[in-house]
Amino acid sequence: MIQTIHIGRLLRETVSSPYRNLVTRPTGAAIRNRIQEALAESDCLTALLDFSDIELLDFSCADEVVAKLLLADEPCAGRYVVLQGLREDQHEAIEHVLTHHRLAIAAVGADEDHAEPRLLGWVTPDARAAFACVCTQGALTARDVAALLDWMVGRAEVALTALAGHRLLRAEHDRYLPLPIT
Amino acid sequence: MTRVVEVPASFDDRSFEQFAAAFGAWPPEEKILIDARGAQWSSPFGLLAMLTAGQALAEAKRERPLFTVPTSDEVKRYWARTGFFTYAAELFELHGKVPKAAAAGPSDVLLDVTPVRATEDVHEVVEKISQGASRILHGELGLEMKATLRFSMALSEACQNIVEHAGTSGWVAVQAYTFRRRLGRRVVVIAVSDAGIGFRRSLESTHAKRFGERWGDGAALEAALIQGVSRFRDPGRGQGLAFIKRFLDQWKGKISIRSGTARLAIVPPWDEDLPLAEHLPFFPGAQVQITIPAQDAEAR
Image (cartoon, rainbow over all chains, first blue to last red; front, side):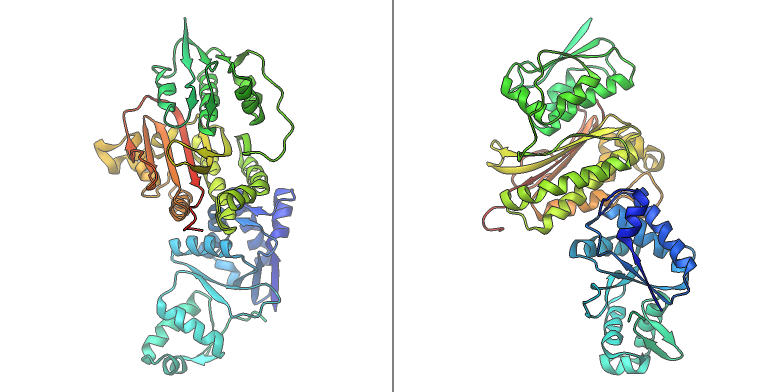
């Protein structure tokens, strides 16, 4: 099951105003707390954080909402968390803060956009290649990925294990699956 | 005794040094009179510097300073239009007739003089600027549409520095004008100023030791703007100024920060400013100026 958390709605409820700009650290921290509450109450496998109602996202807020969510002791209450509906400048802000912390998260387009997820933030080039491979091909073993990318199996295992450890892919037995977002 | 502080005829970040020097030792013992009668023009930086001086004197519990308004009707009208006199009246005993602010319409003032006291004010500033920024940045300066959002992000981060670090409130103003002397093009200028503790005191407890004897206002500015450090141990801090620098690099913009007795600038090719100036006259708090020039035809 997938839970969609509308960040614009949380913002309106949190700052009690009609603003669509997600700015300042206190606002970001308040939104992150609301997201963590929602994740803790949910039994969904995946949470989509939907930014499509958000106009501006500054660095301080991106750091508070996304980076600190991933840095928490119990990151995302064991859920897979994916960002949805980001615009280019928002991508840029999140990419910047996550790279700074050497973290990464997956992002997808708006509801109607069926493009493959993309990774924002810092992962190794191998992990990025393996992620793209699994997203386009579906469930794969390390041996499959190695064959597709012309790598040694050990290299594929390292990349896939890292992705699964950061909850950017789903590991089931010896297979790695794309994030459950549909 | 009253100490007269003359407002430079053309008041910008350069002539600011003359203004700052006129206060002598800070806080001045004498009653202060800020004499703006001869003022012919002021950048947003200059307007905020005057308010910051008034605020710092009030916070130092000095006698309420006097302020003589410009003689020029045109200058008075423009300053009124920016909202300057609304706040000046709270900080100074005004002498001279002050016009009522004209009704707002499309103008070069993107953001009136606006106080920044708390997080809510930053929201308000970002909300207000988004309405006029695209007209000026895209329409007049030839920046890409996406630059409007980045501009708002830069503004947000600059204002948050007051709330997070100054220890008191501050001011922001944004204006477009033609930068004849140095550039010969239209620019948009963000000015942010506060009367707070300044960069050196903000960073002292966490970073002074590392700099040893070099520690001072200049080193503190370098640490914040060049090295991206913050007084907070949180590793996510200090990215706001780093982003502003990157944004300005893309648009050949300039940032300068003056705090205490030093001033540090990231200088673009069109300007001849010194990257670092130290041992300047003391002025309280921190003053930031961000300048974004119209893009030349090739860049468009």
